[in-house]
Amino acid sequence: MKTILIIAWRNIWRHPARSGVLLAAVIAGLWAGVVTVGTMNGLLQQRVDYVIDSELAHVQIHHPEFLAERRPGDYIPGHQQIFDWLGNDDRVKAFSPRTMADGMIQSPLKTSGVRIRGIDVPMETQTTTFHNHLTEGDYLNAGTRNPILLGKALADDHKMEIGDRVVLFFEDTSGELTSVAFNIAGFFNSASTDYDQRNVLVRSSDLMPLLAGYTHYHEIAISLHGDANPAQVAADLNAAFQGIEAETWRELSPELNTLVELGGVMLYIVTIVIMLALAFGILNTMLMALFERMREIGMLMSIGMSRSRVFMMILIESIILTLGGALAGMLLAWGSIYHLSGSGVNFGMFADGIAELGWDHMIYPVLSMPEYITILGLVVFVTMISSLYPAIKAIRINPLEAAKQV
Amino acid sequence: MSIVKTENLSKVYNPDTVPVHALKDVTLSFEQGEFTSVVGPSGSGKTTLLNMIGGLDKPTSGSVEIDGFVITGLKDSKLIDFRLNNIGFVFQHYNLIPVFTAFENVSFIMLLQKRDKKELKQRAEELLKAVGLGDRMDAIPSKMSGGQQQRVAVARALASEPKFILADEPTANLDSEAAMNLLDIMEVMNRDKNITFIFSTHDQRVIDRARRVITMVDGAIYSDEVKEVALVNN
Image 1: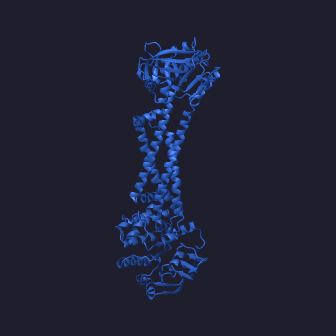
Image 2: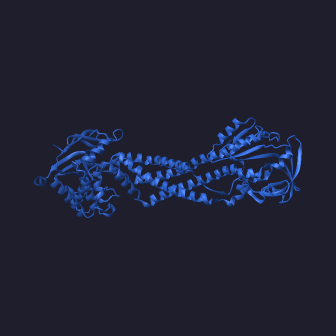
Image 3: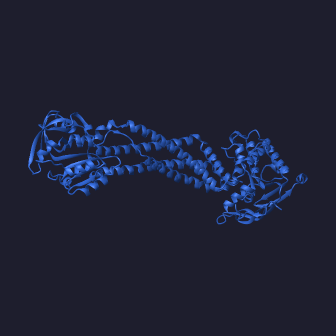
C-alpha cells in the first residue's frame, strides 16, 4: 500500500501545473461555495434572530381568535395568573404583555393605516431588543403626555418631527371609534421599511384606558433561555390555561420557518452544484492523466501489477488531489467565515433595497460544525464517484493493446 | 524438461469478419539457459508468439506450458500473478515508471511480490551494479540515456527471479554502443546465471549473438537453427 501511495503521490506531481490548477480549482470552488452558503445561512439566521429578538420572541400568547379577527375585545383572559406562571418558570427569560389596536394615524399632511402597539417599556426592554432600533428621541420614557414612537419611514411620509402631534383613530372594546392625540417622542428604524411604515409604539398604560376601562392585554411575548424548547413551553401553557392560545415563532411566522428550512436546502443545492462542477474537473484531469499513461499502465499490468492495485493507484491519485484541495478549501472557508462572522459582510451599496425586503445590509456569515461535516461528506462522496470512473477505466485497459508489444 | 513449450499454437484475429492467421500450429520448446532470437519480417507472427508465451494474449487453439504448468485458459487475475512470479519482460520502449528512480523501478516488482525489504534492497543494488548502473541508482528515467534505461529494464526483469525473460526488440531504440553493451550484459547473465532469454528482433546484432534463431514467416516456423557458436559456448 505504501508503494501504491508513493507512486500515486509522485504521479500527481508529474505535471505540477496541471495538478496545481486542479487543486486551485477545488480550493477556490469549495471556498467560494462554503463562504456563499455561510453568507446565505448568516442572512437567513440573522433574519430569524432579528424577528425573534426584536419583536416576535420565542412564544406568544393570544386570545384564540385575536390573530384572525384582531377584535379589541379578544384579549387574554386571566393574564395575572399567566404572569405568575411565567414568572415561576425557569425556562422563561422575560415576557412582555402588549395591548394592541389597528387604526389610523392622522397628521396635518395625510392619514395612514397603522398597527398601534401598546407596550410596557421596562418589560419590553427585557424581552426584546426593539429599543436598539430607536434612532431619535426616547423610548417612550419622556415626561410628555401620550408619547408615541413612529417608524422613520412613516415620519418621513408625513413629514413629521419629534414633538409634533398626531391623532390616532381606533375602535375600542365596545366597538366605538376613538380618537386621541399623541406626541411624537422618537423615531425607530428597524430593518424593514414596511414595518416602519405600518407600526407605531405607545405605552400600554396610555392605550389601555382608551380601549377599555380595565387592564387587559392582547399579546404576551415570551423570550426563553437558549436551551429551552419553545414548542414545549407553548404546549405547557396551552395545557395550563383555558381560553388562550400559545404558539411558537415557527407557528406565528411560517415564512420564518420556511426561511430556516430553505437555508438547509440551499446548503445542499449550492454544495451539490459546486461539487458537480468540480467532479467534471476531476474527471477530466484524471482521464487526461490516464490516457497519457495507457502504455505505462499496460506495462505495469504486463509485469504483474494486479488490476486491484492499478485501481487503487488511480483512485488514490484522485482522492489525494481532490480531498487535499477540498480540505484546504474548507480550511480557507472556515478561516474566512470565522473572520467575517466578526467583521460582517457589508452590502451597504444595496442597503435601501435590502431594507425594503426587511433585511439587514450587514451580513455575518455563519456555518455550524454539522454543516461543515455535511459539506465534507458531500465532497468525499462526489470525489469517490468522480474518481471511480477513471479507476474503472484503468483496470479495463488491455495490457497488450496498451503496451502495443511484449 | 523444457522451460517453455507451445503445442499447436494458433491465433486467428477477426475470425468472423476478415480472418487473419497470425500463428499457425506453432509447436516449439525452449530449454533452460537458451539465448534465442525469434526473427522474421513484420507480420510474421513473432510478436504474437511472444505475447502468447508471455501470457499477454490468448491463443485461438493450442496451448502454452511454462515449466510444466499450462497457462492457456488461466483467468486474467491468475495470469497477472503468474507473470509477476515467472516471466521477466524487457520492452522496446524501456517502459520504466517515470516517477521512480532506477532503484525504485527495480525494487517495485519485488515489492509487488511482497519480498522482505532488506533482501529486496540488497538484490536491487546487486542487479543495478551488475548492469553497470551502481552509480545511477537514484536517477529517474528522464535523466538517463536510452541505453541506461534499457539496462534498468533488464535489471527489473531479472529482479523477480523469473523462469525466463522475454525481450521485444530490446535494442531497436539504442545506438550501436548501447546495444552492444546491453547484449554483453544479457549474455553474461545468460552464461553466468543460466538465465533464459527469448528475443523478438530485427536487429542483426542480436541475431548474431543468439545461439538459437527461430525464423517465422506468415505465422509459421520457417526455420529453427541452433548455431555452431552456440554449441561451442554451451
